[in-house]
Image (cartoon, rainbow, N blue to C red; front, side, top):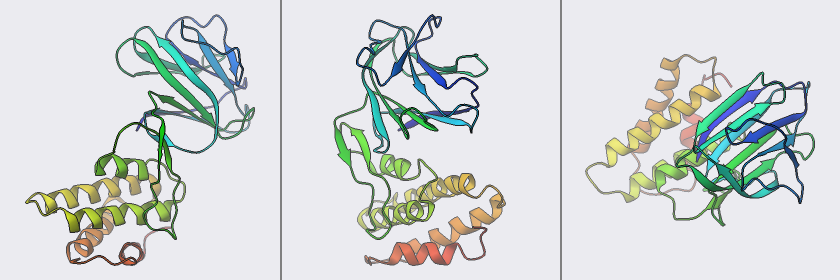
Length: 249
């Protein structure tokens, strides 16, 4: 799951990450000599002075995209992962758990000219598809170690802004499936909670649309799903198309 993100403007191409120790040196990855199990720092080369670099921090499941440039162990003496640029204009830290040695996987969108860097702690070995509606594929996730709950799957579907239509349709399809299969008294409350989560994602996706308008869209989706009594392969697509009428695209 995504636990943090930071966007950085860098003059020097190296984005550094590792423990909270003073940065005396770093190893640029990919490199067979890269080793931070005893402490120290790694660095990925990015597109300096071109555009902001986006760094995501994940725990376990994460998008199966980009190129893996490091997969090993990292020592975090206080349990915090630090990300910074060479000039220390941006210094970001995230508490990631107990102190000690953790597995770290690093993915970049372009080796040597990264605009996106994914730092993954404690990734598992399995891969999982997130696509539920075949005509609207979304990236799969890697780093899965155990079966994921519906809430976790929804979080992963809505963890990014690329393929927005496909993400929205697959998210609604998940809500429909859960609504049709959960016969407990909590099903209606759970349905509405899932849709509120979709609305919060849409606030990020459509920043120029007022919150009340996005809530209206969520209300339309909620009402449409509540009326469903049996499965239909095209339901999620139709509901999304109907709910987005007049919304800024």
